[in-house]
Image (tube, rainbow, N blue to C red; front, side, top):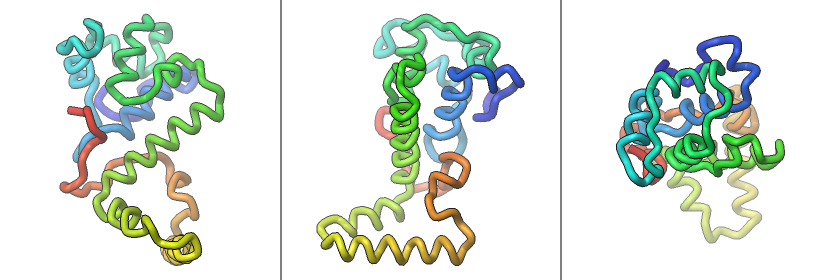
Length: 172
């Protein structure tokens, strides 16, 4: 399976499958999400992932909920590949902690867009009241364009399509 969406109804019942699919859909270089084959090859081909051997087929089963109890080593390798705490994949985080991880992922995805990065960096050092005014102006534009007030309400993180964007550091 090469897309970020679940492949079977079982995935809806598997928190691991939902979280893996979220990461596949959000954390990728510009252009297209990672494929199972790419992730399995990257993890299996590098000592940086603890010598874990992962197949495309097994990763597919994890993503579609057919397998729900991988070894801690596999979870650590997947967490390292996507740059998230292993507790996020293990399900060891509280709901608020898991939401914080997903919020950080959305932030990293948004910061891949050089225009968004430019707006954020240009606001550094401005007085708080000016930053509040800029936020209000952006909110007005979002409302005029019928966008949700909070970008995280747009249905998940994704690629901006900008060829000058970069994947979060450490990704292939």
